[in-house]
Image (cartoon, rainbow, N blue to C red; front, top):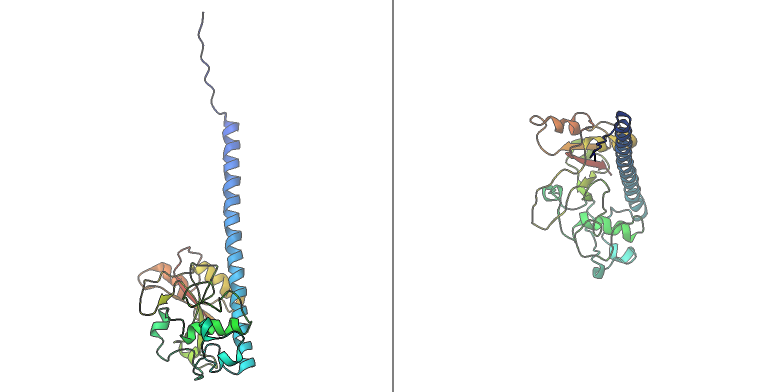
Amino acid sequence: MESRSTQQGFTLVELAVVLICISIVSASVLKAQEMVRQARIKTTIAQVQSYQAAYKTFQDTYQFLPGDIPAAQAILPNCTAANSCFNGNGNKVIGSADTAAIRKGIQVISDEETQFWKHLVAAELITGVDLTTADIAWGKSHPVSPLTVGGFSVATSNTPDWQSSPSGFVMRIHPRLNIENIEMAQPAPTSPYEAGQIDRTIDDGHPAKGGMRTTAFGDPANDERLAGCEVEYTALPDKICFVYFKL
C-alpha cells in the first residue's frame, strides 16, 4: 500500500483576490470614518451659527445679554431659583472683568457664563441644555460639542480687536469644565484639520484673523504641530487647537 499526502497552498491568483478584498474593506472603513468626521464638522458649524443667532436674537428681544439680564426670573419662562436659573447684574458684561478663571473653564452654576446658556434655553432660543439642572456638566449646564468630549463655553475676549468691538465676548469649543476652584489639565480638543474645515466654511480660513480664531495648547516654537493652529491650518491629526468664535 502506498501512503501519499497532498499539500495545497494559495495560488497567486487567490492571494491577489484576498489582497484586493482587504484593500476594498480598508478603503471602505477609511471612507466611513471620514464621513463621520465630516458629519461632526457640519453639526458643529450648525451649532455655532445657531448659538450666534440665538445670542443676537436675545439681545434684540430683551435688550440685555443672556446671562447678564437682571430680571431673568421675572421675564424668562421657567427661569426660577428652583431651576437654578438666576438673574444677572445688568452691567453689560458676561461674568467678571477678571476672566483668567473663566478662560480656564472654572465655573459655578450661578456664574453669568453658565447662566448664559440657561437664559438662552429659557427664552426657547436653543436646545441641548437642561434648564432645571444644578450641575456643571456638558449636556446639562453647557452644550456638548460633537468634535470632542467637551463642549461650548463663553468668556470675555482677551483679543484686543475683539475687546473693542460691539461684542467683546467669545464662544469656544472647550475640552472640559472645572468646578469652582478645582483646576485640571486641559487637553486641546480640536485638530487643525477640523478647525480649518470649519473656518473655511463660516469665516476667512485664517487661524489668526476674522470671526473664528484658534490658539495652540503649547509652544509653537518648540512643537511644529502647534503651528497648524496659529500660522496656517494643516491636516495633522493631533488634537491641539483651542477654537474661538466671536459673538
